[in-house]
Length: 357
Image 1: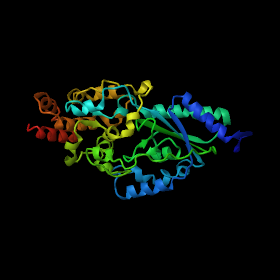
Image 2 (image 1 turned 180 degrees about the horizontal axis):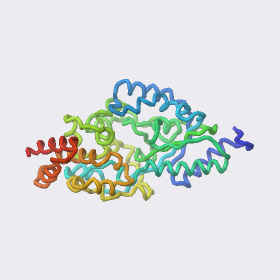
Image 3 (image 1 turned 90 degrees about the horizontal axis):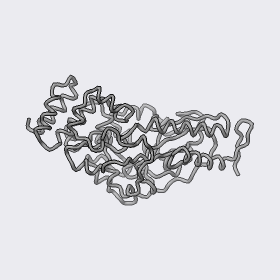
Image 4 (image 1 turned 30 degrees about the vertical axis):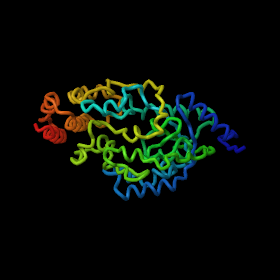
């Protein structure tokens, strides 16, 4: 039995780890794992990815240097990482239906409800406070896609899943439809066994990618990825890629839809992930008609809110340019042809040209 001193107390490390898992389940997490902080292999892969320029305009990926792959550099004193996942898949109209109907808006499933970042961080904070009640004060910091953290590598190292070919974290129990979170801590907790890889020779996600952004197993060229183009990219979407985006106006789940492991994806029990504003069945035309005030009001608390109304219209204009031609589509685009934003006007003009208008 491994014990450690925390303040005036002697604590059974393995027993504490088991209780952390139990507390995590009580707080609504679907799984809890524990990892060490050695991520050398992942660091080498990150550096090669950055050197290839695959991060595009995401300069922050390079700016943080090794803080992303060396937890103790980001949070001094870190020796263990508690990892967590919550399934996000909402009860919604199937995404395949939206993709098959060019007049509908196809939106990544994780973005149909409230933004997961605050939910996961708040719940991790509660978990940290529960640990503190047991151990006394300790050093920690909570994350959920909110800082330079190698979440996929940590999930794999902690036994929560493995990095898929796409390369999102995957688990046999729930596929990839979950959101991650971490607690960096100075508690010397026993690490779980890493998860082995179960993609094998399957390349379904590579074949399914509309823009062929998955250039090799575990390597995505973000500059071609629809999630990057519709969320991270601040300027104009490259013209050559616009027709390939189809009606995907926020993110892209095609690689996950094609993944055989996602047959095991489970619906989330979280009310915050429930569909809001009818986004699972909304048409491109109705979303394109939202004023900036409507966008801000309706998308408050949503992951979509952070791209702003201008980029939202940019994305929808591309979707309308790819939609089946109709007087309604032309009319919607014409109503925005003199928009104050040059970015919006450019994409509206492109869409109108696609329809010969």
